Amino acid sequence: MADLARAFAQAGRREDAVDALLDAEEEAAEEVRCRPRTRWLVEDLRLLGVGAAEGRLRALAGRSKKSWSSG
Image (tube, rainbow, N blue to C red; front, side):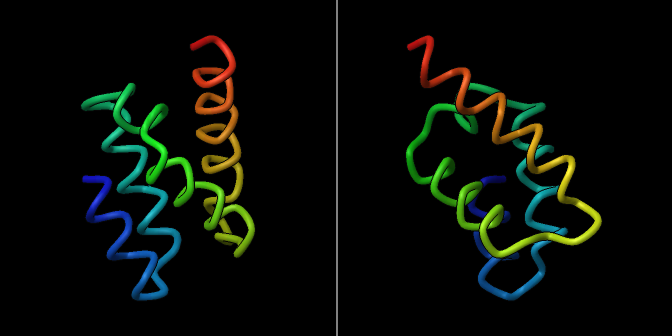
């Protein structure tokens, strides 16, 4: 699902990308929170802005940051 999120982001569908990341987090939280490529995608989306999904993305970024600092 992280790959789907990346594809959505590349297509300019950033809110869909956030939704796909959150779905992926539900299935495998550590894969989303700890994988460098996924963290980079989260950061890229955060910098680009995601409209209505901003709050959900910020929460995911916070959980990812917490996982890296505790690991």
